[in-house]
Length: 84
Length: 96
Image (cartoon, rainbow over all chains, first blue to last red; front, side):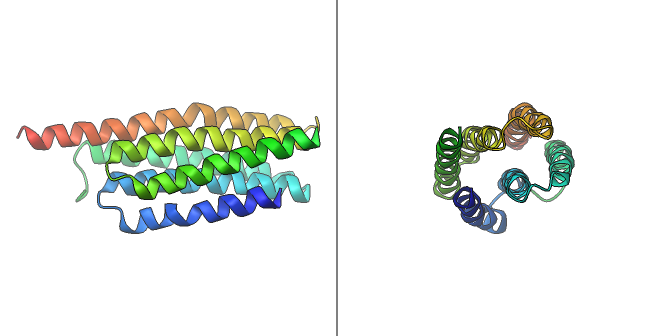
């Protein structure tokens, strides 16, 4: 279980690089969605490993809020907002 | 049961690593969307199924299954929304 956790944390590095140097705004939105998905699964692995089940509710809240944020930002860019 | 859980989690970790390499390698936004959407949905879903198998059938597994359903439903919506945003904006720039 620690191996999966370490693999997800290592795969967070290219996502953060994409978030940093993305040429367009959509790359950054995509990297934000990808990073939040990975963080949700890391929180789930920690919750199951340490048997603290209260963290699973935190993960559900984080997933719902990140979904809302990504959809709202992409609709905002679609209408022509921001500098792209 | 534990062996199946570890196999599923290892497979999911491989999917996630390959997908995040693809995020750096591809140049177009649609290719990046394809790499991210498919591999994240498969890999993270496999890891969550492995977690459900690992912890047995406790009461908090309902929360894990709910989180898995939420992720499976919302990831294609996010991918479609970002792709539609990029396509509409680029189309609008080409035809002023």
